[in-house]
Amino acid sequence: MILKFPSSYYSGAGKTTLLNVLNCRNLSNFHVDGVIRINDRLADIDMITSMSAYVQQEDMFLPTLTVREHLVFQAMVRIPSTVSEAAKIARIDQVMRELGLDKCADTRVGGSRFFKGISGGELKRLSFAAEVLTNPSIMFCDEPTSGLDSFMAANLVSIINKMARSGRTIICTIHQPSSDTFEMFQNLLLLADGRVAYFGEIKSAIEHFAKIGHQCPENYNPADFFVHELAVVPGKEIECRKKINRICDYFERLSRERQNSDSLHSSIGSSSSFSTTLHKHRRQSRYKTNRWQQYVALTWRSHLTVIREPALTYVRLSQALVSKTIFQF
Image (cartoon, rainbow, N blue to C red; front, side):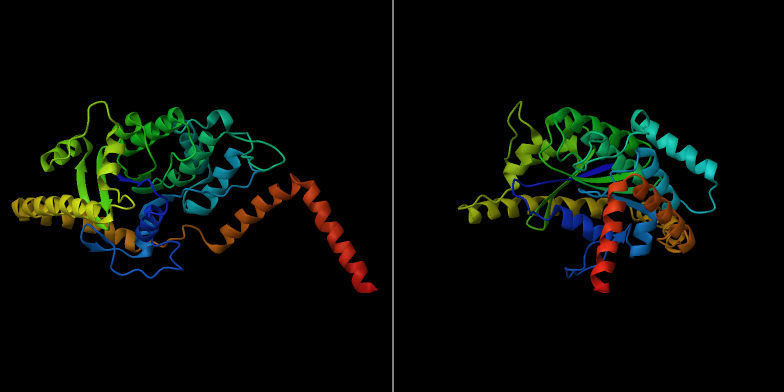
C-alpha cells in the first residue's frame, strides 16, 4: 500500500516536517504536540526506527566510495551482527539487482567538483537501496522524484510500486507528479490547512470530489486538479478556506459514518493480531550493531576515503608542518 501526500504549489507547505514528525527525527527546533499511534498503539522512537526506514530528500554520500562499498558500509552498521557476512553480501547483491544498480556497482558515487560519478536517477535508487537492506515493513520517502525528469521519475515510482506490492507500506510526499506517475499510487491522502480532505483509493478520489461539485476536467492531470482545489490563492484567502472547510467537513462526515458501520469484532481482531508485532519491535533497539562494529565500519570507510584522496592527506600534512614551524618561532 502506498500513501501519497501531494504538495501545494508553494514550498514550505510542511511536507518534510510532517514526515519528520512521523519518524521522530530532526525535531530539535520544533515543539510537537500529540502522539503517534500505529493501529491505535502508542509508538515511540525505538519502535518506529526498528520497523521503518526514511529516505530523505537530500542524502549525503561520500564521493570516493563505490555503490557497492556504500551498501557494504550500510550493511555493517544496520544489519545485526547475528547475520553472517555471506548473508549480508547476498542481501546487498539482491538489493542492487532489484533496484538496477548492479551495472554501476563498482562506480564511484561521485558528485564532487573533481569527478563525476553515477547519475541522478542512480543516486536516488542508491538512497532506496541503503534503506531497503534491512527489509523494513514501513518506508517514508520525502519527494523521491525531485530533480528527475518525467521518465526517470516514472521509472523510480514503478520500482517503489513493486516494493509496495511485496508487502511493505510506503508513504511518499511527491512534487508535481505527471499523470502517469500519479496513477501508479494506490492510496491518496490529501491534507489542507491541517485537515484531511480525502483519504482512500486514488481511483475513487475524482468521484469523491465530483459529489461535492468539483469535477475534474477530462484529459487533465488529477494531481494538478487536487492541488488547485485545495490551494490557498493569495488575495482569495477567505474564499479558498471556505471551500477547503466544506471539502474537509464532507469527508469528516463520511468518515464518521464509515466508522459507525464497521464491525467492532473485526476492529478488535486486527488490533490484537498486530499488537504482537508491535510489542516485538518495542523490545528491539534502534541500533542493530554494537559500538565496536560501528567503530570498525567507520574506520574502514575513513581508510578508503583517505587513500583515494591523497591531495587531502598532503594538505593536512602541510598544515601540520606549517603550524609546528610557526609555534616553534
